[in-house]
Image (cartoon, rainbow over all chains, first blue to last red; front, side, top):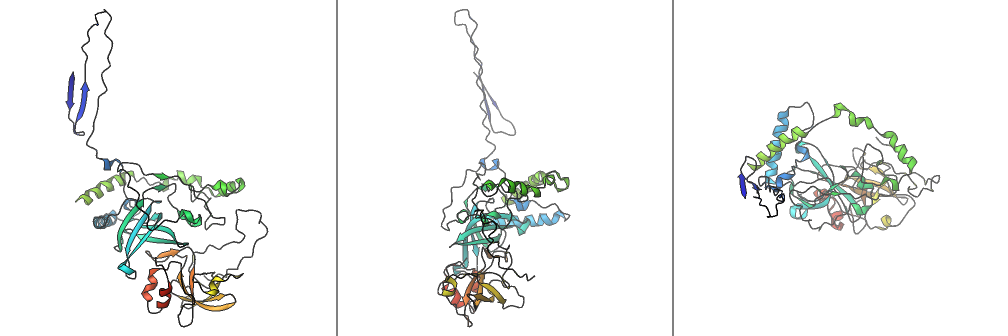
Length: 273
Length: 145
């Protein structure tokens, strides 16, 4: 048996076991039976679990503008400074969050609100997210500033994504899809390297008219089953507002992959200091 | 922009489609001004007894004609005039303040006392800033957001 131990820059230990059978005749005069060598076992211990999925919060990515990149750099510095004080967890549109906000006029000086995140907008320090819930039959939406000093704690109760980036259509959906108990227990956090679970739920809507014509392609909604509410004619009529050329518009292209990599390394470096 | 919103009559022409409501609703994303239909959220008799016309705002006691949370308005309800206090509207306000799915209003007397005895709907906590004027309204409220 020959066992080889190879060390390289990337991996800690590569264990490769090679064996070469010294074949002997069985005494019959037949050629020895071919024994294939066992597959090498590679254990790569350099990559920890957390780095399998790199998540960069969308407000870090600067918009494509003619402003000086220095402005975005100092904004990022302030955002990282705030993140060192308060833990702003990773969440997506469709996750259920609980936010504790400082409120002078509330009893106990702080105000807790639980809701589903329906939209995330804004870049830099002005990043906002909207939480929606139905309390005592009344729909309430609150738009929070992510980096506001009034926010004391953000907790993710249910970590998941939905089929759409913008859940404004929940305003026209049945109330059961926007109701979340204030005393909801936090779901166990998913394992660090796992993919974000996508909730494939298709939402039932109230009777039309809705506040916006969600069937039109400019909203690009996948979370509603339009066949239940529209006839074939109406769906083809809604296709009149399709803009299929926008997908091929080169002036609207903004490839953020390189920018994301740079900013991710910068953010990780500053956060670990 | 003061548009006179006409109350839409029941449309009987396409009533066979079960997926539709039988009246049209204007896209209301503005705060409260003249002719807005409001929802009265306390438990007074004027609020709870049904009537064939929804309560409408006929005047806003404000320099601008637009009422936000904490403004007093005059309501036409059941054929009578009544003052009311705005406690929530559909228009998005400053960040960190709640936006409600309906324009909520609490009936009030001329001296500021509420007509009803209980408000079940959640109220914005920014109303507590004017504790002096609205103390009695805040006292009958049950929940703050």
